[in-house]
Length: 416
Image (cartoon, rainbow, N blue to C red):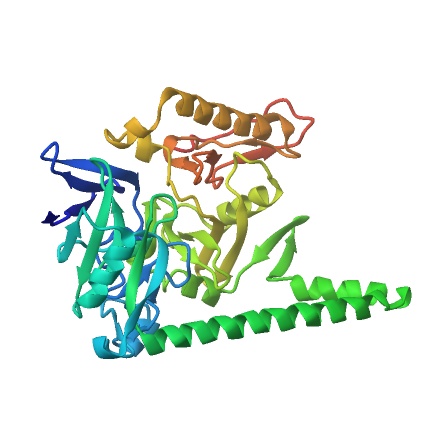
């Protein structure tokens, strides 16, 4: 029996993405995946015949055998035009399939499902139909599995390592041969690289000890990724303003993570693929140069798993930027004050979060070189990493005092 498989993704206003599949048994929509949303959850964010991967940079790429339909727009991160084939399919000359593992399957509105076919039979049936562009072996929520065929363009596909499935995209035989040749060339290049590395290592072993200091100095310079500046005895990494501008797509609204009294926070991706959070201090905010220097100075000296790590800063004229490690699960208030998200926190996880916050405060008050009073501790300043580990953030209003002081005074009300 052949029937249509219907799935849908719902993205609510609180940043929760839920994927549903229609169940013929219960005659109802059933949730098959729930997680915090990201850009790839926007329907067809990368256009047609493309793959969205939030862990890559850029996050959109054309499928193998395809190229951007509008190349200039694609280079400027406008992916809405999608991709088109390099070579059109020709059933008479034979086509093949390229496997994409661990994918969220594309839009199934123009696909057909046959519960009786095996994976190999599914492939044969797709090859016989010149309009068939992809196939997959779909796991059915009511039990069992079956064959799913797609026709025409592939829409809304993304990498999904946790709950993804394998899909086979149809390509012209010449494209598959080209892919195979590229793989062989890459393997040969890797082999040559290994041999060259072995030879180079052998040469280095023979270098006399007289050159070791010089080589160590050169290596240290080579691996230094950013300039450093020493201020008040603390090292702070200084990023070029243009580097952060490119990483945040020129501070695009699409990259905005949140906004507070001191400025706006953006998500960014550096050229090496590292995700960052960039706090762009508002020119009209209450946090001026002194508060900015205060946060850089304090955060540069603090190292604890329950404190957000400051990666560096950037200053250009009136622009002041703080660059932090990226926290994919946002802040604690996004969970405990939200009806749906609060259900994701069981009491065990809540206790772990409370314990983590307490450990961070204990470090600030007793174990760090400078004792710190945060003065603005609230749920929006408790960020959660990918494993829901809490990290205290935003030290713009913090007050420090030396280790031999038992107390200190503050002359005005701080925080909210």
